[in-house]
Image (cartoon, rainbow over all chains, first blue to last red):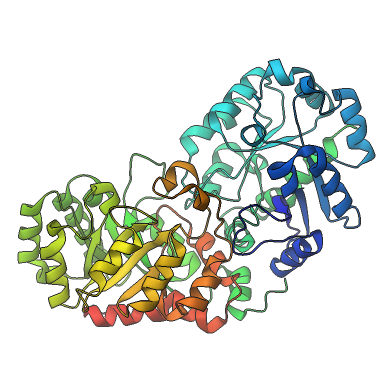
Length: 245
Length: 289
């Protein structure tokens, strides 16, 4: 079974976990230890320092490793730090970037139509998925304003939050959830039964979490092999293939 | 996969390892209002346990720790009787109801399959050092029983500093630090290393907790990811002082096992964590597995 991790990070964090990957090579070593084949990655500099430098660094550090797919972080257009959506998409194409991350808490902005209307409409037009750390209130309002957005919630936290995210799964077909910290017993099986395996993406949350945890969880879930293949790699591959740059 | 562990390889192939069974030392039972459980009852829990090679689990019922202690403990007693050899128990104690404790202790020896007691001091808002726990601690010490305590980093009710204050005072009690004093790692590990009768238990250690779940922790510790903590525990406290737990029906046994079999530790350490240490505690408490 091919394993494609949709949610992991490398680079030196300001408060390091007990173990982490400082470089792309170290991340690949970690992936090989667990048997993970590919990954969508961002660099800690994008979140903890600034997207202005971090977006460049993640491309530079992954360019020689085709199994690592770089993601970029977004900022609002109004401050002029990030190019207008048209130019931004062009830069994404040049750098083979197909996934974007929003870090509204870390970068002090409101992710709404006022600040991001033009960019998020452009993402919808180009079928570009936007990833963000789970914040249910915010994700609910973003999807309310942009119901056709492909939005991936990552790192939902170890305590089951089904009552918070299931309404989103039910209402918005472009809403996805990663499995990195979806721990509760029987949860993956229940989601597959209620909403289909197409709504889950395999993620590890490395380096904050041990990659082996969510790996063993998905490999042993009581679901069909077809469902497992979708979660392990099929869904994220489809999302990447659907991107029009 | 370059992980050379034979146990990890078996888990990846079969979901369990026949030569390395698991005893889950921290479980619960039944529904709880704060969270949706797809599998809160015995038959479903057993299905998950069977798939992961979990031979037995030691539980306290949610009803006992969050509502009616007597009714909840009796539910657990019935489950232990019905599923003998698979379910064992901790008799839940709520220090805010001393009259119930007194009554429960008077006939505790008649309660088969209970290794000892469960403290949930953060939730009951009573420090483990309080006089209100004294009768239980003395009883457990006299009868060489076990106490599973919810412990959380920097908590004024059950932080690892408080565990130290009772561990030496009641040397015959086996103290299990549920969640290993999450977040206050150095002190928790040192406590397990210094006191022969203190164990680290891994529930909640498998994935990083954030925000409100770390209400007592200083800001610095909010950011610490848990990846690598099991290796640190093994190196500094020794795998002989670490126990497997899941809070089942909260956390998947496979998610928990994955953190251990993919940690950079030896297969002997995994054997200790998965079953050897637990068997030693069962024996000391006089409960047959």
